[in-house]
Image (cartoon, rainbow, N blue to C red):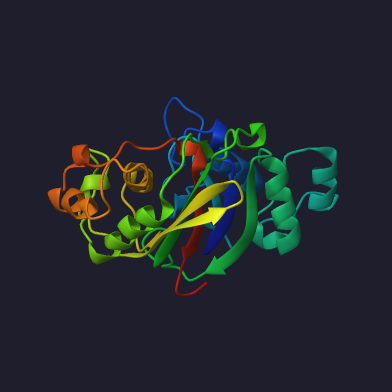
Length: 272
């Protein structure tokens, strides 16, 4: 039976999950998506994501690829609509239901804090991780206590020198080796990344850090934000970022900031 590769664009609130990637003794976003797809497609489904997010990190956009049968048995009597209304697991293959309904069914099977925004058929060799050309993150922080931001932004005390933080952030665009911001003992072939944007923007009663690159290392954004905080508090000068990056030593960079304020916001592909 022929298989069709699909990209799923998903979004999730990472507050109650131990990150994206499957783990043996923890609940993850990938686990919940795989379970919902297994019900929809009547069998185990392997998903490959554009990258991983850590515990408590959110995603406004992340792409996942799967493969599903092009031809499949007809939906059960009453159709997918009847199954959805009755709350029964919907056992139909992707090609046998309308795109809009497919989204409705899959989202009905997912927890409230995970959503599939669209499903796109792609060519057989399309890869959610390796074909991505750009990834963007935001880090949110706020200065005034707000119970509605508890799991979605980092509350900090004291003023920050935003101009100095932007001077430091701009220096990052001059480098490619970011070993100093990488979590230790990660299995990657290179610590090189091409950053094309790193900027702090004032937003409401807080700040948002925008960063875009072709790829990111584990814990990289949170470590960069922690280092920028040192600059903003005048613990180090903006130019000292050069020494930190060139040292390639994680212990010279700032502490990783809390996960709650971090969002994966965009993943780009040449064919989407």
